[in-house]
Length: 201
Image (cartoon, rainbow, N blue to C red; front, side, top):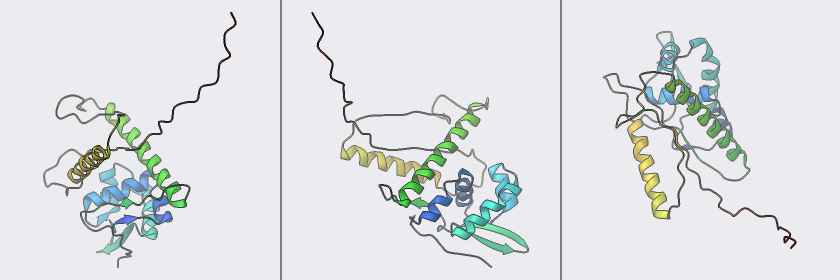
């Protein structure tokens, strides 16, 4: 029997967003979305490279929040995302100091911690490709002046990247990668300078 409260489109509920502030829970949801089928805890643990015992608590919490659903098939517990097949959880941002905004910030911080962990792990692997057209490890921070048209083009390119990573898992084994980005406008108010007393002659 499945416990289901399907999520369609974006998530704006504060409790659901806060649930994803845990990098482990975010990774569980992302992995199940990528697998796109009911998955046992053992299978999920193997995909994530984590012990199965450490996932049960998080899975229960995610089911209770409505972000995952649980099935029992032939005595096996199986879990899957409640987002429609082929879609990913998306967060709706409400700016300011609302509970939603604070929860989204915690999710963002968790994602950046995951990215740091991914980078460190990959940089310790001697077979990681770091140059050329098949480069798979890259960290950068870019800053520049853009027009509204430029911002639209940046968003179009990011959506194209997301579509590549949203593809169903291929039958032939391929490398699993993670791509994390942060797009944010910057405050460019000039710094205030303290008034200097004129020099004495």
